[in-house]
Each structure stands twice: as structure tokens, then as C-alpha cells.
Length: 201
Image (cartoon, rainbow, N blue to C red; front, side):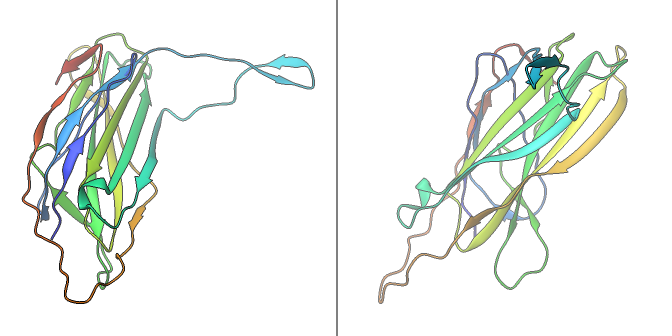
């Protein structure tokens, strides 16, 4: 069984999200995110060149922390970023967590109170980013983030949607200790906090 605690960190120019489905019981807490506009030019052979094409959405595993004891030190941090498209007025994102344990061939959705929430950018934002940390991971198991993106027009209708998966975070089994068993951890969740400039969905 999996017991988690979720947390998300705010950055000066971002914003965040999560989602819930059937699966393992989890403990979670979410906070933070950022949004802004970025642009840069690269230099090739001493000459200025336009930046290479950037995908309109990305999903990454930014950290995978493993630990034998305590369980609360085991965590995975996921990040999603999306860019405005023509016709979009607002953007929305959420990050879900999937788990696969030894002996299983399929990932299953992790269910936690702090997961399964859509977070929206403020109108007019060009780049919207959400960072989600999940702690108290079980072992042995593999975890990955499922990041969902929605672009809305001025009337609030979805004009584009995407789903991306992050790289996996592997939590190896701790060394076995004769006569010693890990204590059960009760789920607990902390409400998430939106980052600067974020708006509720």
C-alpha cells in the first residue's frame, strides 16, 4: 500500500495543479507555481540566431529522491509547462501520479485528496508552469507523473488539449533487516497553495 504526502513549491513567476482516480490511498499536499514570458536568442559561430522551436507543452521529472528510512524522505517532483496558442485566453493544467509495483505490468493511478485538481493561469499569461512534489513514497515501486493540459478560449471552451507522461522515478526496495518491519503510515493531505499570478479554475 502507498501512503503519500504531496507538496508543491511556488516560484516567482509560475502556477500549479493535480487529479484523482481509483488506486492506492495516498497522502498529499500541494503548493506553488509560476508564469511568465521568456525569450532568448542563441549564438552560432559568433552570429545571433533565433531560438530553436520549443514544444507548446512539456512534462518532466525534476527530482527523484530515494531513502531507506524514513519513508517520508522518499519523494518525486514533477513539473509541467505550457505556452499559449493562437486563440487561447487561459490555460489549465493538472498533474496526476501513477504507480507500478513489482509483479504488475500496468501502472495504476494513485488516489490522494490533494491530487486531481485543475489549476488555471490568469488571462493573458503566455507561459504557465506547475510544480508538484509527492512524498512518502512506498518501495519497491515505480512512479511517473501524468500531466494534462487544456487551452481555453475567451468563452471558456477548450480549443486544445494534451496529455504527457514524465520519466519514471524508481524507488528501490530497502535492504532487508531480519525481524524488523516498517510501520504503517497513515495518509494525510495538506491543501495546495497557488503560486503568484495563478487563478482558481
